[in-house]
Image 1 (tube, rainbow, N blue to C red):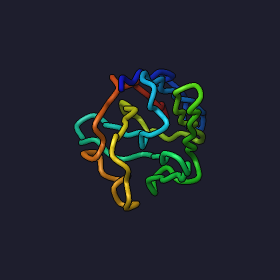
Image 2: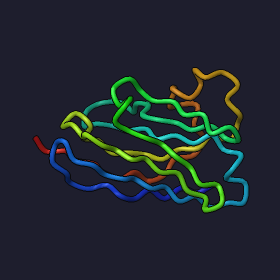
Image 3: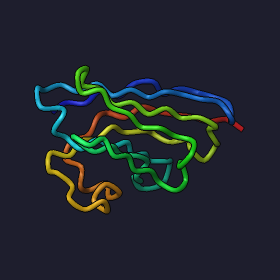
Image 4: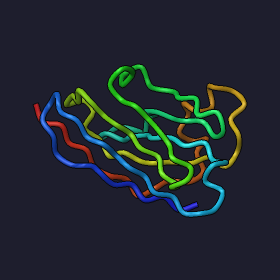
Length: 127
């Protein structure tokens, strides 16, 4: 699967952005999907994920209540609505997919469990 993320940009603290990820391939619905980010000088960290079939969602504690992940299997897209943005949300955001089914919820939170990555989109939140 190939992933193309878009929607990043510059926003003031408290503002909102919506990231989108378009995926190629006919089996998109079978992939576990996630958004992860990498801030300057830091490693990649989990942000949010949504499961295949059931659509269960998972969030990092730092974004819970502010971000919402969704997927549209008919359109091969996964979105991340980000509200109440903070300067510490500044990072390159990556859309990622996993071809293996995650039978344990803990798998969603680990970046190395995702097989495919998009090119990333930069989100900058000014204070």
